[in-house]
Image 1 (cartoon, one colour):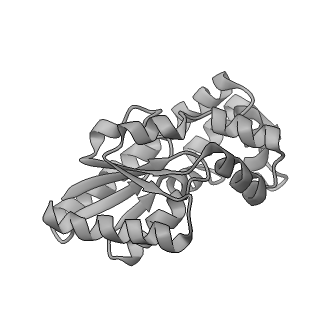
Image 2 (tube, rainbow, N blue to C red):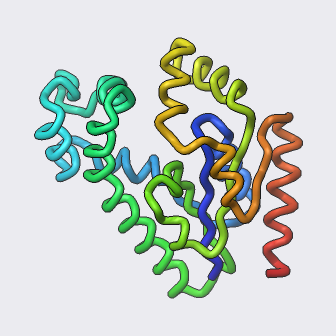
Length: 199
């Protein structure tokens, strides 16, 4: 089974591309969803985050206050590394187990893991193929501002916390441009998925 990683910078269209791949029949998994499950109240990662960052990163009912935590980690590289050390091992273990189960079932020719920080965490080598979504930085900024309700300075700070999208694209096996229309993006995804049959 071909193990495919999907990655790219913030707001470069990874979720849309993953959804299109899923609609075309590829099994997919999302690292962000895994991380959200890992930090549910009462889970070990949730407790480790509370211990490291304090009660201020939880709401009154004890659930993780994601915007509060994001405000801390995107302003402090050490805090961001600490959070990543709590979450990333759990995320990668879950993805590896999922891929192993699919491979053992021998029913799928390929599977896709959507991992935003693939290159930053040094895990590109875990996969047979890396697909990167790409658009220009100004489009990223505008999308983050619209999607997250952030001002321009905060949007740029969050983009700067990751490896530049152009550097990710330079290392990729396949690059999908999301700078155009959704139809144009879908055409590229469709072409990629159809091409998997010849690998």
